[in-house]
Length: 470
Image 1 (cartoon, rainbow, N blue to C red):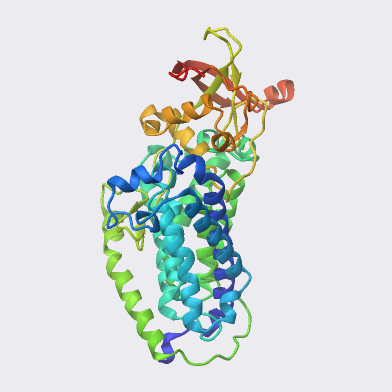
Image 2 (cartoon, rainbow, N blue to C red):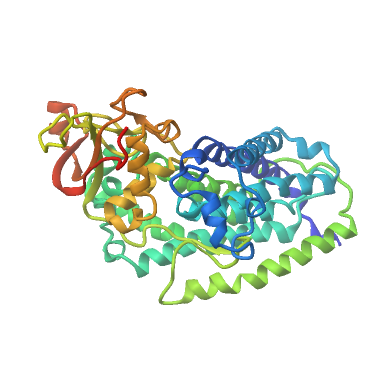
């Protein structure tokens, strides 16, 4: 079938595949370096406890049959190795069927991780990576030209990501309709980046322009993805520019980067297409069957998008094949942070020698400037932002987290930037206090060198110690 392939998009496929493999690599590296404290046998929410109560059909995973920290580490590092091989172009050296199987490996491994990841893996970019990765399995390699229907599926996914995010904003917080959300967003977002302070202090009229441009990019431009080249290429380029602007303004894990990767698949690069053989019949049958399945499953996110009760970031099946997306339907006006402190004093006095734990990404010391971590994902830091919004978000893990700090648990302390206590002398008590944080002004920054100003609000957790004596 001559219509089946689009030879002019061979370079777009190549760039898309290599970039997606790099995102996979970051995702597996994040899992490998953080899982032990979060999900391990002595983690804050252990996988063995989860799989005891959740059946395989609801959460398909290799770890439903067997779990050990060594097996999880093996899967995560194997995912890193396969992702690195794909980024280096190993799939181009294999036959078509072999390349497809190779692309299936990171998808299956990461699905196994996400489906037992519980609250630590409840973010929309997890499903977005899985849905993108599944479609990528059927893009083929250098043996055949890119299939038209798979390129369409990638555009359809990009459309749902952008259009869904635009709709959730217009239906959500009124500040999006009033064009005022960016008066607060850069200050209250989950994890500010090194430039977020400067973005916050841009003139308010420019903030209005930013919000209006965002609405255009998310509510109008997505329809142009289905137009012929060069309109579709221009639409994708505009989305890429918008996502890069977001990358500069904060740390949003790999959400922006996967969106950029999807947009790259739309760009028709000016390069001559190499001559390739016609697609084999079995490949055409498989691709068309999978495309039909995904189009059929798309009725659920479409119904969600047109619903007045639209929800963000939901998977409609346990394989995360077709999902709904969206971000920041509401924007906080005030930033709160949970500050955790410990003391070695025999008695936990309010004015005792309390020393603060420092996290890697979330605000702590007002003089410490935020750093850039994305696309790497600091899962504990993100959940601490939710914990500050309401203790209910942290009910399943915060108490265990405090216990691990009282034990000076090595794996848990690796998630932090620094501990105020030496390894052989854990604190006797740990407490948590809630503070309100705001960005300093230009004048305050010059005078104090601090980018944050914080004010004590209330006690979050009273001084706590281990029940068993050390």
